[in-house]
Length: 273
Image 1 (cartoon, one colour):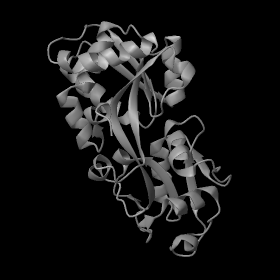
Image 2: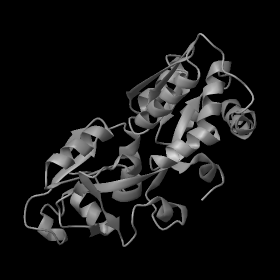
Image 3: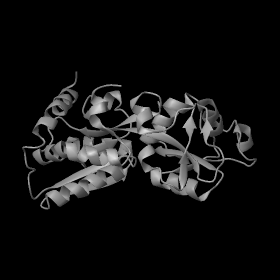
Image 4: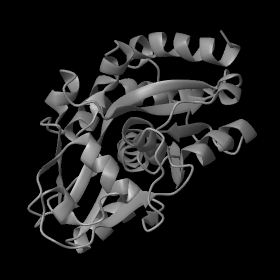
């Protein structure tokens, strides 16, 4: 086991015990960068943290999972946010600590009459094999496929769990954030995309897949399987103020806030599924 990973696992065990008893170091700035899927949730927690500790700044930036991992490797960020596992070379130098679970939802416009698809149908739509909504039980009309950019953790997880080696159609609209995917699908009745379940709002509908609804309960019972971890990425010797922020994120208060936003608590990740 690599030194960074061993340190990260030790940190995962010890942080919940220390979270309530150690104040953060004051007068410093913590830089967090990476996944746009994780971004809004960490921004939310950062705001709560800075409200509790006004002398500590938490600067949260996007850029994607790969960019966040690279930022930690180069020292440009204290923490990376990733919605994909570390590669072998990355894991040799860094550790990954789950902060929550997230389900990937397949979304359509809220007026779309299609409410359920099979994974085979989703694969056909995103590969371009099924290019008309009538091909999958909807109203006749060309499908607008919306996907994420290369290097996105969300796209990587979607390709692994859904596409299974098939390429996404070249006609797909490529977007650089979950928010952008949601905006396009919300504005186009013919669109289909995918994003974090916690970011679904009433302008879009999350589809049932193979009869399994994209809900927290379905994730916890193993019925809904499009699930990936949200990770903090860190080196083997994080600064004390960085450790203090991670302690907060893994603490009861922050985990409850994440649950309210549609994520699954980190303890469920660490306990295995």
